[in-house]
Amino acid sequence: MAAIEVVRKILREASQNNPLSSARGSDMLVEVAKWLFSKQLAFLGDPPITIVLWNGSKIMPADGKSVGTVIIRDWKTFFKLFVQTELHFGNAYCEGDIEIDGDLIALLEAVYRSRARVLKNNLLNEYVTKIINKPKLNSFAGSRENIHHHYDIGNDFYRLWLDKKMQYTCAYFITPSVTLEEAQVAKMDHVCKKLRLRPGETVAEAGCGWGILALYMARHYGVRVKAFNISHQQVLGAREQAKAEGLDDRVEYIEDDYRNISGRFDAFVSIGMLEHVGSDNYRELGKVVQRSLKENGRGLIHSMGRNRPERMDPWIERHIFPGAYIPALREMMEIFEPSGFSILDVENLRMHYAKTLEHWLMRFDNAHERISAMYDEKFIRAWRLYLAGSLASFTTGDLQLFQVVFANPGNNDIPWSRAHLYTGIGR
Image 1 (tube, rainbow, N blue to C red):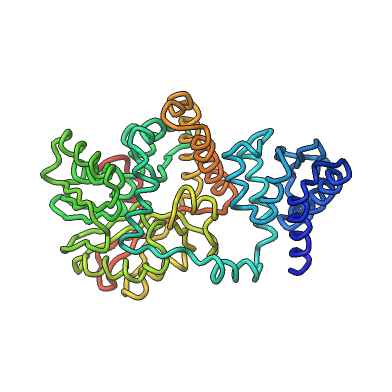
Image 2 (image 1 turned 180 degrees about the horizontal axis):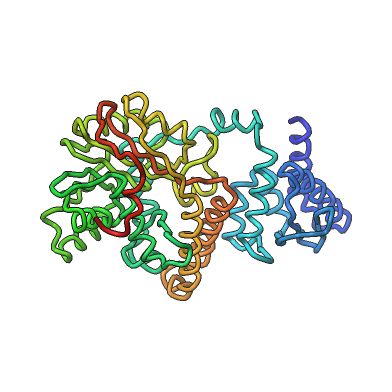
């Protein structure tokens, strides 16, 4: 640690003295930068990428094989990257202080794979996760503010690159060649079949997005739904859609926190909300589900996950998903175990989310001109980095997508096999 502080001191003094004012100072700074980047790349497992500094100097893999190049425009950007790489890489990319020559996704995949090999069974990484980078709490007020930051950007923005029904969660690709729209319908049906919904039953949905799943459950499975969401824009859009489809008498959208769910239901479902709950609130979520389910009720939680507890990427947490935390499967058990639920089924749809992100990113890129008319280039680069980074995280196994089905322990009305899940779309 002392060595790092010495280097930081040298760099601070260099910045104060403007090292670029002399050739000697410039050369010295470049040599320091090359040495530090070599150490950083070694710490990341020596991913097969090339670094190009502001004067054209290169740091290349030992074998000369590189999947892509990171171009650093100036020494100030280098200094920020050294201080906190994960945060400032995203910032610098958005500002244009870093450019990527080559396939952004392939470059990120290479870094993630190398990093995973190094951090596997790394006790320091687990300490940093649990102590230093403990995720932010999601209070009532904090949760609303965090959701507003991400989901209330504007429905028109999301409409440009999501499917026609505006589903912002992992789709379910029966085959890799189906369209995104077909895969999102299949996802909803997959969820309904796992819950074994029956006509006349009632469903509580926590975090309903633009409300499409609630409408699907009501129309195709004959249930009544109360859907809770704290995104004002999403709730407005959902209510308009329910009225347009003539389902507003069977689906009620409530602009409120999941902690305020009341009543008793036959089923509880949450698709893509757990990432916003925060691990400190998992037991409370379990209590909400417990008081909401009838004796023979059952539930499903669909969430991004990890192989082991790990902190949220600081750049994504700060600029894209404030307050977010993606749990390991054992952390999710804090929802179920304290409330005595029985786990009936766990499925990992990791590659389905990778395929979903492929579609989103392609549509996002195709809509670049229209998005440019709405937002500046910094915003566009931020969202492209977020989508590409998420895709790379799923293809490299850094991120998972868990669907967990559960029920009260005395409920013996459970299927003997999974045959009911694969009988085609619809009941």
